[in-house]
Image (cartoon, rainbow, N blue to C red; front, side, top):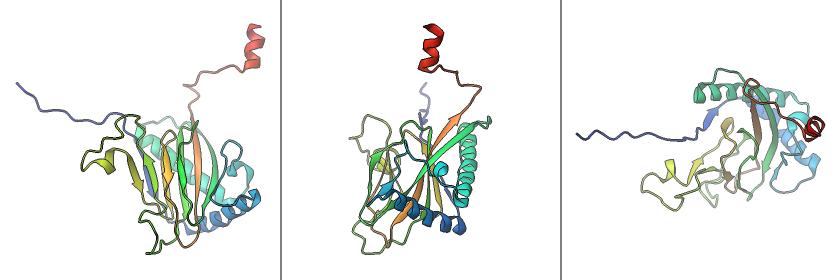
Length: 222
């Protein structure tokens, strides 16, 4: 007897997209992003070196406090709904604003060392009809699997293979695993596009094994 085939998805990558209408928050985050960019004196497409800078640590601002609360609450929902995780782990956040000028994109990268990546878009201006590309400013999520990237089954490319396009807008919060490669199409809007990118570390003390620093190791075994 032949049974019906069973079809299931293995190793899915869950992307969280939530849209907010928080104009007061956005009005606070936009000038702060320009201020931070001015403080660093960086021209062109600007985003922090996340290993050295953390706007949540380096700047005291009410809008950053509100953004942090928003992200922490959403991360909790993400973990609960995606992984059925009731543990309420301790979260750590670091972040940096990105001011994307006209004509600038972001090459493919992932947030190495972070458990989760979060992006909040506080100012995505109107895209004029004469923009040179249709998907200007689109966030591209790249297939994290290392094989079969040259195979494009008809009708399934956009939802399963190669890449996934996310049309961003003001008030959008995205959350996805830190290993996901992503890039940004060149921006051709009326003014710079601004978002805040964030790394989230998830700590579960009851599961983490305590380690030893090199000095502690030498002292114990030397």
